Each structure stands twice: as structure tokens, then as C-alpha cells.
Amino acid sequence: MKILNFFPLSIFQDQIDLGKEKKASLVDEVRDMKNNSQNLSYKENNDSWTGDTQGHEFIHKNPKFDIFFSELRKKIDLYLDFLKIDTKQVEPFIQRSWATISNGKEAINNHKHLQSHLSFAYYLKKNPEDSKFVLQDEVFRNEFIPGLFKSKTAIEKKIIKQMSISTAPRVSVEVKENDIVIFPSKTLHGTERNKSNNERISISGDITFLSKDSNLLEHLIPSYENWKKL
Ligand SMILES: [Fe+2]
Image (cartoon, rainbow, N blue to C red):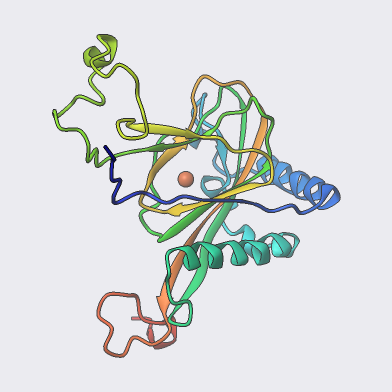
């Protein structure tokens, strides 16, 4: 027999090595952002610190991160190439970027970046024991009995004897320091809970694609050059 797998979610994973010294200076920069948080009441006890909610949501405007964003551009191009997207017709814009810091049992709840097209996470500082990146399924194409994959009792009774990539409602992605993952922003994601983090630092960001030439093209966002403020 053979099994045919169709309609996969494709997550890009690669590495960006900025060198020890550069990374140490960026880690210091991120710690400074945390020390200058503007909205600490926003953070609940076991939530990670997320710079976008604390007044640090445009780190792509900080020249210290220039080298990172130029490496990021290369990775975006590789992902687009995998998807066979014509990069001559669309242009990526970084619209928001921020750092996250997780200590102890802190985690990032499941969420999506609905104002964006592609998102990324880069692991500037990560120990092997720190929490992994978690992707959640919402479509369950193989769930032929509704509720089967997430039913507490069905799980307890082991109706599915062993979860596999064809039945899992979520996957923990093995990520290490220097790794970068790129994924569609609409993907539900978060970090593992109940892990003990030792200052896990990631850089995240959102990228929007504008069409270069919207003539005769209905569905993409036209270039900002044709926009007008109302
Ligand atoms: Fe996110």
C-alpha cells in the first residue's frame, strides 16, 4: 500500500549565525528593552515578556539589528523560492518586529498574526531545555470522526493508539539557538508550557507582501506608492 499526503503546511527552518560578539550585543540590547518596558501590567504571571506589547515593536528600525534583517531577507527569498513564488512580482515589507524573553515557566499563549502574511521566529538565545515552538492544527483533515483528535476522553482511552503526523492536533518543533523558522502568519502557534526556561530570547516579526504591479491583478495588495492617506 501507499499513503498519499496532500495539502501540507510547510514551515521553513534554517540557521542565521551572527557570531558570538554580535549576538552578545543584541542580547544586551533586548535586555535593555525589557528594562524599559512601558506596559508591564499587560503581562500576566506566566506570560513571556513580549516587546511588541511593551513599546518595542519596531526593532527593524534599530541599526544594530541591520545585519540580522539582511540575513532574514535571504531566508524569506529561499522560502518563496520553495513555494515557487515569483519574487519579481511581489515585495516583502517588514511591518513589525520585536523580541521575546521567557524565564522559568513563562510561555507564549497560542495566537496568530492576522495583520500579516508571513511571520518568523529567530532564536537569539536558547538552551536545549528551553521551550520549543508549537504549531496547532485547526483543520484536522484526517479527523474522520469529529472530535477524535482532541477529545480528552478519547485520548485517555487511547482510541488513537499512537499519535502520528497524520493525526496530531499540534506539533512541537525542535528549535535551537541560531535557528529561524518562517511560517504563514495565519498559523496558530505558541510555545511549550511547563518547561523551565533560562532566559530564552527570540526575535519575531511580521512581513506583508505588496504587489509590484497591480495592473490586472485583483487579489494582492497594491504597492503603497499608489496609496493616498484619507
Ligand atoms: Fe507569534
